[in-house]
Image (tube, rainbow, N blue to C red; front, side, top):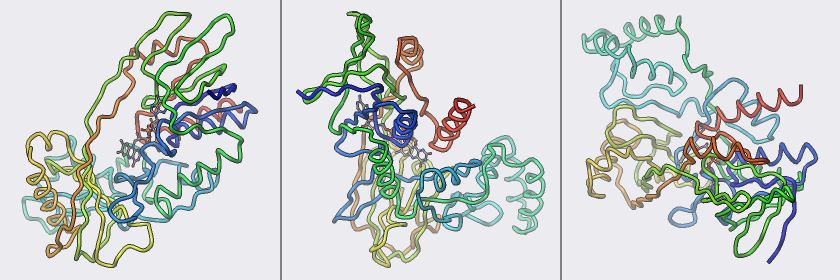
Length: 373
Ligand SMILES: Cc1cc2nc3c(=O)[nH]c(=O)nc-3n(C[C@H](O)[C@H](O)[C@H](O)COP(=O)(O)OP(=O)(O)OC[C@H]3O[C@@H](n4cnc5c(N)ncnc54)[C@H](O)[C@@H]3O)c2cc1C
């Protein structure tokens, strides 16, 4: 069995974990990343759909928080493209006569779903001219600004998530970080005499001074000086539909469906890859769990999803569905008591990765700036 010795073992290889590993390596530490899957990337890892089409594995978007695109482009060196024109909020019931709103006005959608909903409905249902109503409401809301501090331009990786993952691989290599793929860490053992952590699998053992885990990359148990604690987790099902849709010439990047009982998010996952046919799209849909229970049968789910996509105008009315794949999995998250527990142990850290990548990156930047000061 191979034995690796390092300063820090980082569990998982999503951008969150990789950037953590690179930040440690930049401070001169010897770092090993352990990833359970054959390739790195976490939920940003691309998948092959149908016949050799490389596609993002789910609808993805990096929200326009201050400084995030600059960080990705200037610090990380990934190329981004402006997708503001093709990212939408799709309403089943048109408001102001419009079904699709630019995603850059997401703040408007948040307010529509919140306390201001009735104002929107009243104005919209009273049959006011769409443009008059929207300019009145926009004016009113613009004074309040985006409650979540988003910017108005939306950017995405040129070449999709595989371009991001390629760049993450380069960063790991150029910083001398060793990556062990197919290496699921099920247990971590601490020995206080040597002040070292050991993680073992069938193929390798890693001995380190510290371990970095996160909300979605953690072992089943931690043993501290002979005493074993199972780490409490919560699990949620996640259902995605991959639809190959023929005869739909329109393309779109990403859409969120606030009113649909079944469609949570949808994306044309071939959007940024070349070689896609002019009229065939691979659309990935993240399903609403409540909707899955309600609709029950896969064929009923598929019909309702296609109806929502057609109704929104994102795919053509005359399109046909050539193939459907339903992917269902359970995603585990480390429960709060377990996080509190492990972070009291020497050399064990848990990076927060619960929110979107944009929020996590902002937190990491703020922390690194504090460390540098
Ligand atoms: C389907 C989906 C789509 C998303 N889309 C977006 C989006 O568009 N924008 C956004 O900002 N956020 C998005 N998110 C949120 C996402 O959680 C974060 O962006 C980020 O990927 C979280 O990173 P993570 O490391 O916590 O989890 P993950 O990305 O799930 O990565 C965890 C990795 O750790 C590995 N791992 C787990 N346990 C072990 C172990 N014991 N040993 C070794 N390896 C292990 C897994 O194999 C996996 O590769 C999405 C989440 C999901 C589920």
